[in-house]
Amino acid sequence: MQAAKKNSPSNKRQQIKRIIHLNNEEFTVKELSKMYNVNPNTIYSRLRRNQPAITQNEMNNLNQTNYYSLGMDRRYMSVSLFKKFDKCEADALAYLNGEYTSFPNAAMMVGNYTHAAFESEEAFATFQEKHNSAIFKKRGGKYADYEQADRMIEALKNDSFAMFAMEGEKEQIYTANIFGIDWKMKVDSINHKRKLFTDLKTTRDIHARSWSEKYDGWVSFIEKWDYVLQMAIYRKIIEYNTGEAYTPYIVAVSKESIPNKAVIYFDESRFDFEYEYVEMKLERISEVRSGEADPVACGKCDYCKSTKKLNAPVEVGELIYV
Ligand SMILES: [Zn+2]
Image (cartoon, rainbow, N blue to C red; front, side, top):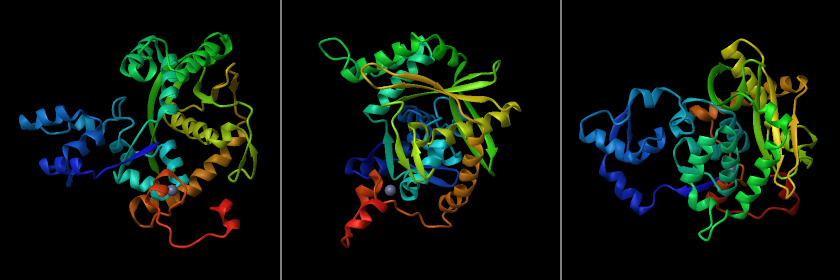
């Protein structure tokens, strides 16, 4: 994620233009557009016709268009927002307060491209059309990252077991009230007949290992990126909606020149640890989110680095324990 400064002079000029009152809060058109993912021109045209800037539907109903919007992140907890708070409270709160806008970086775009390939032919074509200049070179052919992604897509498409694991309805949205708050989730693939769901993950090396403070030991990329936690929460939200505990799988493909691949399942005993972990952390997150507690800055994320002011030296031994 890259952070963009919000109050550039040109933004300030626009902000003075028009203030809209919504739910006892004041917004500019730009802010509302970002909040509910509605085109600013649509908002201006509604205002000219004396219509509400944002419809009740856009404001209240979670859908494919507003799923990743700031407005819905304010309303719902999600695995990614939980992970953001867990990593750095100051960063998560600044994001929720609209202090910066995050947009996908190059690596995330390649990930989205790979996901679109397995969503549907239509979704894949739309994605390529929309991001044409990022994917295709002017003189023809694709940029190296996308050629690599094509090799990864092909590696999975040529594997009937991986394709079997991904059979189902794509990009389904669910919400549920668990651990006392409302959550949202969007699953890559869900199969109600087989009572399973699957998430597609791209990674540098399927067998890489890293040290984890959380698990106090060596872990794979699955634990490193909190994918066990993600699967555990998804399982609970889906159970809330369907009344049954579905089996989670991860289909992983590596970014190596010859892509490696695996269909990964989880021993059920892993989930209880994650539920306890989420429950324990949520208490603190709720306090920070509601303003009862001040956020703690991690000191090393992009947000902290960009707002950091030095006032004392650090002893060499402290460096690896921040
Ligand atoms: Zn931080």
